[in-house]
Structure formats: C-alpha cells, structure tokens
Image 1 (tube, rainbow, N blue to C red):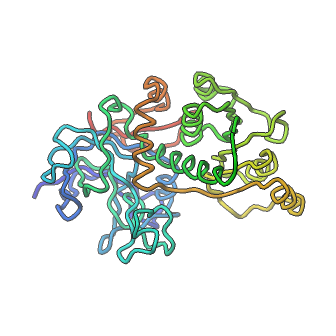
Image 2 (tube, one colour):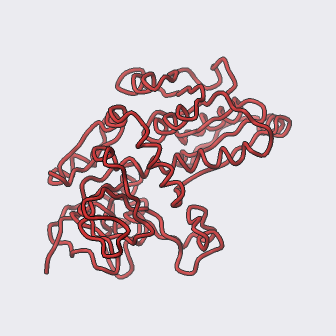
Image 3 (cartoon, rainbow, N blue to C red):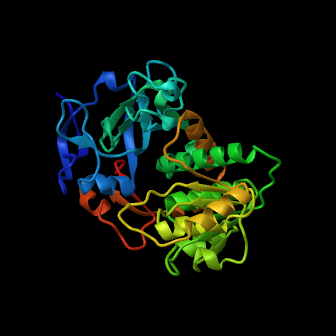
Length: 351
C-alpha cells in the first residue's frame, strides 16, 4: 500500500504533533482531483489544535492531519475542471451533510447549525501531507504567478469575505467611505490592508510592534502605521477591520469609528477577561450614529475566488515578504514553534 508523509495530531491531546511517513494515500472518496502538496501555511488555529484546545478527527479515526492553508499542484483531474500542472488550493469548510438553509445555497461560512466540517480542523483530513484530494467544487485554481505565495489564499479569503460584507452593509445608505483603520498587523490584518488599498481607501494600520518587518510592510502599501492606542488617533475612520481579538482594542474600535461607520470583527477573543467600560455610552453612540458592528469568520466559494483575483493583482514581492520562514517538512517541529517576529510560517513540501 502506497503511503505519504503527513503531519498529524491526536485532537484534545496537548503536544501530540507528529510527522509520519506511513499515512495512507488519500482515498478517491475524498475527491476526484489528486494534488501534489507544495506548501502549507501555519496559523493560530493550528497552534490551538496542537495545544489540545480544539480539533476533531474524521469519523472512526484517532488522529487528524493538520493544515488548512494549502497550496498544491494538480497531478490528475478526470473531471476536466483543472489540468495537470495547475496550481490549486482547497477550500477549507464544507457544508453540513443535511444542510441548513445557508449551507444549501453555498453560504457554508454562515452555517446556522454548526454541523459543517473543515479540512485540518474539524472532521476532515488536512492538507499537510504529500498528496491530497479535493472535490472539484472545492478546488480553486490559481494564477501561476502565485506559485511562491498561494498558501496565502485561505487567510485572504477570510479578508475577502470581511470586505464583501462591509460593502453590503455600507450599501444600506448612500455611503462613500474614505478611510479604514486595521487593528493588528498579522497576516489577516496585512491582507485586510492590502484589499483596502486596492479599493482606493486611505489605509491606517495599528499594531504595537515598533521593530521588525511590519511597519515597513504597511508603509510599502502606501498606508500609515500607528503604534498609539486606538483612542489617541486623531481621526474617525469610516471602516474598522479589527484583527487582534484583544478586548480593549475591540471596545476602542467600536467607540472610534465615525458616523454611519462599520466595524468588522475578525479577531477571536480568548474570553475569561473583564473590562470596566461604559456600555450605555457605547450603545448611545452606536444608535445615534447609525453604526454597525459585526463578526466575520471563514469564507465561501465566492470569497475564495475574490481572494484569488486580489492576490494575483497584488505586488508579488510584497506578498512574498509576508512569509518570514519556510521550513522543510522534515523539520516540522521548527515550523510549528512560534517566533517573535514571524508573520507567516510555511511548511514546505516541495523540497
């Protein structure tokens, strides 16, 4: 029986991360398209799964293959959807087996009953293996120019969804946004800033780092980098994309946005912390200024396609600069170890 290398964990068991070279070849039931893995991006969700805080193995299995930020090259596609040699990414979330109203129409990012599955996270094997399979409707072909950076498509899809919903909410009235504040300069924040510049907005990014690559990455977009608290900024943004999940920053963002403004929360707070604040004053401001605060997570096929187009239009050298470490798969433990100034770490399967 042919086998592949795979990075796996036992969900719920801290520090059970392992590389095996005896993982079964992906079964055709996983999808008609066979893909050679090139690279897998690593994010905070992976670290939470490794810590035992999250994750669910496929039914009947004890271990879960990690990896949801995929980049691969098609080996074979009998359906004709893609051609051998095409770059491809796999959509992470799949709709539930008995779909809720949203999953039934392809809006699985808005699943109402929580029975969705996710590659490398929840009940579906991930992409951190030499070869994987994908169904045609969950395969996203990429422009060849994205060969070095295509694993950024998954976080970019999250940002594309956020902007899609910001645009839809803004369309409730005559709305001509001029400025956006992005809080947090991690991968999601930087990609949010990228898509904001592609919209022609005046972009401001706030992060606490004063050294490292983040300030220069922001400035090279033509955006302004801030390190002061949100409340000390001398302008009221029309849009805030909050990417830290830090409770104090979240509240400051709600208070800082301008009239008829939109605050999109993409950062996930850990909970367990309380902050003393004037909820009545916040409520008054949101109501009297017609402001909207909403949460956004995951993405559906439309957003993946939007993200692929946005990345293809971007400065490829800038995108490449987001990747601060590329680690060969045989040194997988180094890849999953956190680094102080890392932005995006990539596990390299291409050798």
